[in-house]
Length: 77
Length: 485
Image (cartoon, each protein chain N blue to C red):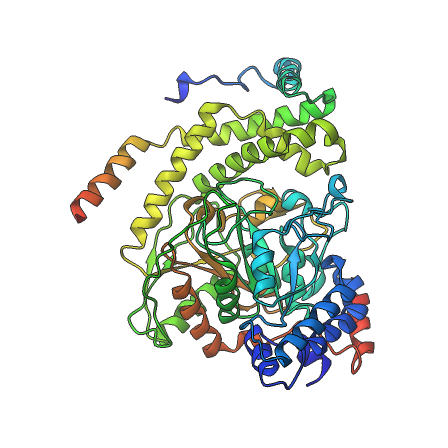
């Protein structure tokens, strides 16, 4: 599942930094918020780290867990 | 009764003394005013202290009692109220310069309930800015009364410090990822995050609507139950307020047969030796009290932390958007980064976090099929230095907020009631809080187990060294403040 998702940090910090900064500024601008490049760079780095952590949740087989929970409940009933 | 004794009364005992007319509400409020004059600047637990207003309320409540009206266990009891809870006509700032001059016209529902129960608002308690991020830029940080150089936790740090320093009989806090339970652990008091929906959040600044809770912070479990009885209840103004909360059975004073699940420590969430020993000792005590103690595996704390931080960032960003547009430069750096970061989370990630949350709730629900309560750590170590930007408990450096939120977020996601209680002390005298969680609406089970633990150990009798009578012992108190600060 993981390989199907966009990997925002794959290009490495040097090549990705400008585009990530622009992306962050663009998203915030769409909400009417202007931030300078330095702030955007910090946000981009934190977003990359956060996104990596959230990505681990996609490795969890929720369908199986959901089914197991449901089966357990049915068993109890 | 000395001034110091008045300031350290439990809600239960103060109520008894008030009802038997051995003390008055004015006596209580005046004792806190006197004590605050000595300790206030050292602890900094109040953003706004309200002596005149509190004395007026106290006089009115004493007169009411003299006329034969008793409003119940909170009649005449002084409270510290976290400054993100609206108080009509009194500034409610959320600890942010953005709201420095904000004075709400309407009372929050929970304060309305406190007033109807006869409680007195002694002051607005200091807090982390927006109850999120970092110490208030408006009020400054709160010192931990056990060691003034240590953090008092986040984000209801003023509420917790006020209770343990003898600067309020009880307090209200809010909790979206542990903000009642974390400072309660740092300060060695009791802090209850009730079942989701039990206490109205109407008039409390929202952050993450599906994670926010309001709850009591007190010296004992019984006190919190008394406060909860007054503040819980249905409210049209809060869309998730529970209208018919069940009242499952709970153990009484006899804990024999109560099943206690003690959490196994997960990788990445290791605790210090002192916390591990406090957890073991508490389990032994409960066993001696007749509980059946077994070890259990909690659901993934990693997943819970990730889901809580992501959901709270997005929900917070959504609420703060208009303020961020107008004044994001007036937010402290940490809160601004967390909230602006919420705008960058994509829908797939957010949805996944919500789905993981549902699974975690099912997993916790399943645990309660085999145990009546869960016993876990709250923090990974006793209180640490307030000056530390990062801390490392063996799994790499973490910033302060992250380091505090290992064991508490799970129950914000699942909605189960969970409380911090004083579980022991480290060798250097700093408190160690432990967490007890129960099935939905199982607050009375938590109260029963913790009350028995409190009676058996006597831990709640201990007070920090700064807690001396300003009249009798002001010299040693001031010295303690200076040397520790």
